[in-house]
Length: 309
Image (cartoon, rainbow, N blue to C red):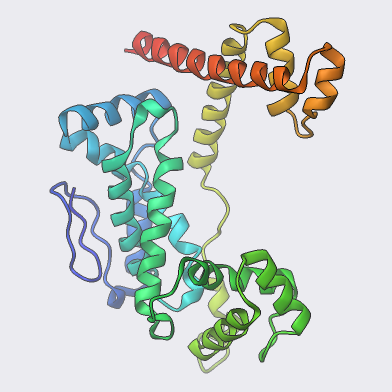
């Protein structure tokens, strides 16, 4: 797999859409976004077979299809980091590198979709790039400080604390508690990010005052094909779960459902009183039922993939 990033880094040997340079601007980015929409979204069975081919035989064509089918996911995630003042094309390029790392390490037999697994690699790659690019945070930040850096804007918005200047002490205390950092770290990070200088999205695009920067922002809602793919996967998983539940006895089904499959799970004490057994016995039944359910789902999924091919 081969993607050229803004830092001229390359990886692998498969030709993919080349990201536009920062100089190519909005038009180049729009061309790229239009191009990656041409790649089809994979069905669960297709994704599994391609992932197995790559895992077992290092098939470059399988890897190419896995990567290209998820380029839209990278672009969508990258759009969420536009507020850090870096070119979107560079964010996407870094995210593409994370996607390829995710493809290389993906283990399809674990039962998860590639998008769920690769999302972590994509975000990690983009976040590391942002941290390298922001001179104000190039000081060996800890994991907690990184979490603070990438969550402070969102938390300020939730607290209606977007005005310039230092945060109110109550807001500082809440953010510090929620993110597990000191109040001093919150104050210092907020000051660093203010010095970094975010531009308002309401600034006019030209001297005549025509249009605003926010008019150029893409819709962050899900793409239509993503929505269809997610709905299809949800139906597939629901059918898989329903069939696997049939392998449990009546008590196992009831306890597992009431402990793990409802919005307001019941306590071990409540179930122990109803079934006339100890809380530990209820816990044992729950664990055993969950293990049986997982194995049954894996078996059924494997049988369906064999029938599909």
